[in-house]
Length: 135
Image (cartoon, rainbow, N blue to C red; front, side, top):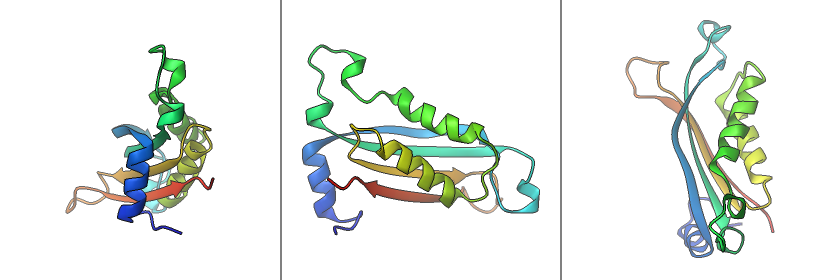
């Protein structure tokens, strides 16, 4: 299988898909494994890229129902966050990427989360995943 960072995969996706993105979407999230992270919310940044084939995302009537709506991405994130405490960013990223990839119009997903307030000596700590739908 082609690796997610392969230039061949990137080229294939770029030639056959449009990329939708949500950058630095910030939400308060109950997340963390450490004692100081229990019972409190902290800022979490979400970055999402979706590759959607041109064949299912090229509008003919300039109507929202002809494309994958950004609100879909925000809704998937908000719904999972509302379910309560998540221990690991890895778990959250995997769950969200799987849900986003389940959309019939989505071919691939790159999703990252970042905690900007955990350590004073770095900008953020985070996790990124890439998932590709098997056709």
